[in-house]
Amino acid sequence: MSRFSELLLAGCLIAAAANASANSSFPGVGRAATPSEVKAWDIDVRPDFKGLPPGKGSVDQGIELWEAKCTACHGSFGESNEVFTPLVGGTTKEDIETGRVGAYIRQDAPQRSTLMKVPTLSTLWDYINRAMPWNAPKSLSPDEVYAVLAYLLHLGEIVPADFTLSDKNIAEVQKRMPNRNGMTTKHGMWDIKGKPDVKNVACMKNCKTQITMGSSLPDYARDAHGNLADQNRVIGAVRGQQTSEGAGGAAAAPAPHPAMDLMKKSGCSGCHGIASKILGPSFRDIAKRYKDDRGAESQLIGRVKAGGSGTWGDVAMPPQAHVSDADTAALIKWILSGSPEN
Image (tube, rainbow, N blue to C red; front, top):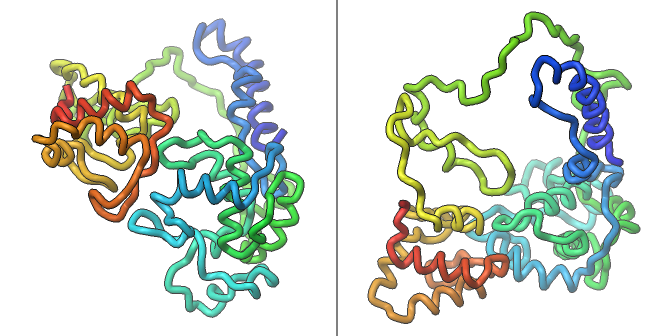
């Protein structure tokens, strides 16, 4: 069990004890997390690799995964493209030996890559596992995470081309991270000398006797920055309130088109806007281009499934294999119809 899980479980036990007395006053408000919920949250990997799941992946396997899922945003060799800054570059064999990136010491690095900055291999494994690929976070298996990371490390000349990264040897690979000695722990957030770096006591006085759930925004400010419900990432349970109906909650907004939810669930909104370009073209620009093309529907369905680049610029669109054929067809029909929002 990782440190995060230990703290979470301790909090759950305290909450369970509090629930026993609180439920008599506030029945139905709160509960202790179940063991399965704790397990689902407990995915962090510590710098000492506690919490790392078993598995393995080779550089060769990582190349295939990278081309299929990572190239569109990071380039074929992690060198960057029009989307994100470089993951690889700026490190030398000497840096790998010393654990300090010389470009930092000399202050002559025009741009800092990920392998220049990150000191702990657990950070890379954990982030890839949690957040990648961008359009389908948490969709990689542990073996696939090991493989992608193995390829990334090979690009940085940290491991050889025939290497297989696993939970058994990752601690040894950590000893070759170019910036492993470039992180300081001499600060209050880390070096707490066995004591908490904050002090406080629970007051538990003058507590409210009635709980009201809901937004605390005043009516005049509810729509000051647009509809909050449209501004959340589609992954996760947090959702903003519908605030587009105007101050005071006047007439409710019409129900959104079913394809709107499908667009967000499928990850399309990460790269495409309905009326404006993000990384890829807007849906309405696509509809204009293919307005009189009778074969557009089947052509675009194939392109979504297979991915590709060149039609709208150099930024590639990764294959959307996670979207079912039926959902893909429904999305394309909606896009070609002009992407009506209601």
